[in-house]
Length: 277
Image (cartoon, one colour):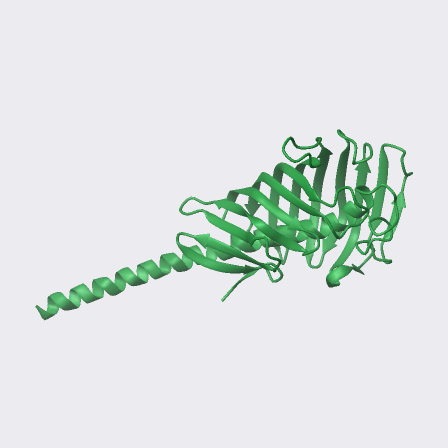
């Protein structure tokens, strides 16, 4: 009888260790894939700031234009000619240019416009030359198209088609994304700091971290420029065993997202790109 009890206890311990190891393995994958999403979101936010400042307000100056805080004095802007299309804008951040929030960029962003971006059908194509945000190097192409207002709220709508590669700490993420961006607030003002947009779309994500490829679905992800972070919506990472869901909250401004996977909940810090705890 004692031997039987010992065998049962050993089996229970083995089962618990196996379960723990499985949870640890899933935890490592969750941390890595969530960090990738956070890094991509960070890069996207700090790309859109200067690009939108120059192209979404055609006055060329004021609080959302050449005088925008998203275009610090250390940026050199070259313009092929305002209101002459196709129009090319080059943003040269040199060997290092620090802007709002201490974000340092270097290298060149090139933007080609087929027309005024407030006009339906106008296309903005953004490419990069040795461009970095902090310790992230970005290459690829981002296409942004005015597709006309949505039916429900008459909000400005844009199609997004991105093919990007991001390298950080010898780790590479290759991502294609197709989706839409609805301009919820601030499109018709001269201020950059009142912009609120909503993104919906699907990304294909390849990584060198060893976790392979994944499909990521963005569902009503709202980015608030006044806040500086996503404030609501979800990103679902499709995985073979259990999907990973990043939830940006219910509208409150903070630098955190909640991650849920297989009943486990984590908190992701959008500044450090790491799971807290």
